[in-house]
Length: 495
Image 1 (cartoon, one colour):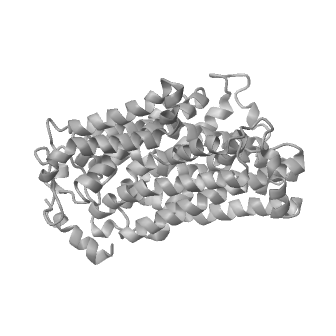
Image 2 (cartoon, one colour; image 1 turned 180 degrees about the vertical axis):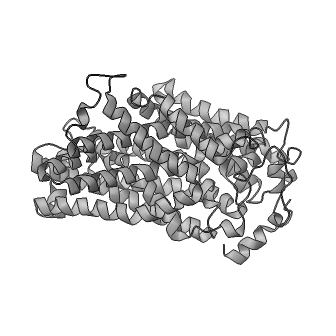
Image 3 (tube, one colour; image 1 turned 90 degrees about the horizontal axis):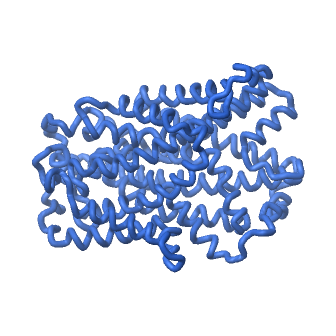
């Protein structure tokens, strides 16, 4: 969509929105002057989110499950291609109407019912925020221990939940850095992602170049990559491949809901769609490949696989005895974790909490609340439990996506009444502000996915939770809403 076309689509914005309890400056539609994100900015957003420690180590779990290196990359690419579809659909609404996710959800769930999907999204984001912040703190702690040998002795024998003072100081330092960008606002996030993208790509390629130079080239690395696959790995390819593709869809399933939080600032539909494809479909497979290749090289160099880049960079720093290398390594890890954490885990809950009480809670205050929850969940103690739970939780949120996609694509055909999204007595009020059909469809999708835990023959429903939940909620919502479809806005009948 070009700027002239976008201006025609935003005729409703010419008249100011009526004041009320459903709108504030952060939730209001973005105007043309705020649409400053082009293809590179959107692509940089995805580069920043994709280049992180979990992505680097992602192929490790797939190889441990029985796939070889190239099959794991195909699984990653396949999952990303699938999730790109709901990403672009939700992003379309954000770009066309300039609305964040909680406001977009009002069309399907109702002005009050939208709290359900936005808070479900916020919960998983707060969990991941705490985990990523703790991981970033671990990176600071490990590398400061190398650069400053007495660092690890701070606090003496004092411990809290098994960790000493240096760990918590590192965690709080990284937490404060995250909080700075929350308080600085969306433009600071755009600046962070755009400047970080080339740095992260160059750093990853430099690590790959180091590995290739040490062992005699990429060909040698890939020839030895099968040594990473354990002898006890499962032999059934599809028995491993399909669940992992589903897991990859679930990896970004939450972002496919709240991507309007970012694309509301896009200059055009082309910018958001092309930018997302360029950033997601290239960077994540590339960085996962770097993880496989570099780890394969560590087997030849050290006699063991070093999957964690923090451990590898710490060892390289110690070997070289170069403070400069340690500083560069620390900055690279911190930037990679920071760009993922800010974009993927703080914007959604910030808008979700602001949507609860727009008159009292701004985006910044919502971000502070989310950051506080990230501490209160004690991620250092419950890291493994949260990761397993959050991956499952992300898959179940496919039920939310099914409802929203059906509503926007099939029921409303891409046409929303912008004014009614911000009024308590408009067409999205439904009954008491809640669209019960959307709630029923949401519950149906989740129940069907969880039914896979009740019998071995139904296990596929849970293993492919995102697909089963999305398909069921989509179908149930369409069936319940089809009799009311004649009353929703259509093309040529906008608000």
